Amino acid sequence: MALLVYKFGGTSVGSAERIKAVADKVKKAHDMGDQIVVVLSAMSGETNRLIALAKQMQAQPTEREMDVLISTGEQVTVALLTMALHDLGCEASSYTGAQVKILTDSSFTKARIRKIDDAKLRKDLDAGKVVVVAGFQGVDELGNITTLGRGGSDTTAVAIAAALKADECHIYTDVDGVYTTDPRVEPKARRLDHITFEEMLEMASLGSKVLQIRSVEFAGKYNVALRVLSSFKEGNGTLITYEDTQMESALISGIAFNRDEAKLTITGVPDLPGVAFKILGPIADANIEVDMIVQNIADDATTDFTFTVDRKDYQRALALLEQTCADLGARKVTGDNTIVKVSIVGVGMRSHAGIASTMFKTLAEEGINIRMIATSEIKISVVVDEKYLELAVRALHAAFELDKISA
Ligand code: ASP
Ligand code: MG
Image (cartoon, rainbow, N blue to C red; front, side, top):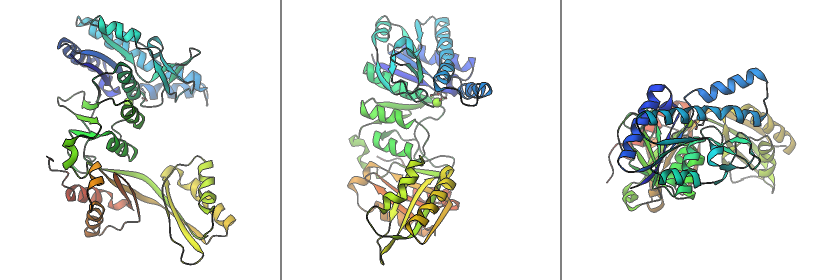
């Protein structure tokens, strides 16, 4: 008998029929003897609909009231699923975050979970019931309703799995697992049976949208085995755990990319202590996130400094950098918002030499110019012109034989 947490996303509970299909699936697992906690999102589109309604009332509603509002979407789905389970003769109870007592801090719309009271959940599970919990929400010390940030139901599921020491946390979604790359770009992309937390974190932060980054971090921290599966298709999905021996043969696990990149360069900067801070300080103060940073070796007394930001922040960053250029007496500022980042990710990189050279050789053979390079222990990222994105991804996918099943 296993204790499993099942999380279903918005599309999986997007209509009455789909909620009934979820009930069937849950009942089947429960009949097999497993203990099941179900965590749900709101019906697809519902959270957006509520946010749009709020904006019709007030341009900037308080975050406290926003949370009272947007937490209702999940309250609807947990009640409906529980009714559907009852209709199948399956004992079940629904709970809001506050009813469970998922205690959070008071940062409305982006609250952090502090503690989960597992008493009610345990009692129901021990009595043979299915427990259905509203995702995305909690309650603060004063009894205010809080929400965890968009996509937060994944985090609820993982946190509950950690609190209950569940055997696995299943994230049911509209894709059937984590792929070697986006199948829309490379149709030969393959579903991975297994990936490590670290790889998944890199893939998620590099643009793979399968799982919320925070939920993967949480799962890693509490060692909750995560499995991503399709709600609509049978299959084992992708298991995310710490490194195992099976993985040792795979050099790289996946190729991630991000289309929303822009780069900025300031040249002829005096090569003095404090310059990096003077350049990036105003950018950080403006709450603009900087990703890659490259500073060249100075050959005269000046140096060049390049960094990347999200495309939506490009114009603001450019204006700030122009100001810094004037303040520092640097030569000039240039920028490009038609670049993308392509990254290869894999724990196998740690123990194998030559991965970077294979990557660069592959891009060279396709005539793709690399504009920037950044590496970490398990990732190599390159910045290239956006017109080469598809070509780069496919060429790398083939070069690292990601279309072939590894041993
Ligand atoms: N319903 C919330 C959202 O759309 C939470 C979730 O789906 O995970 O962000
Ligand atoms: Mg979601």
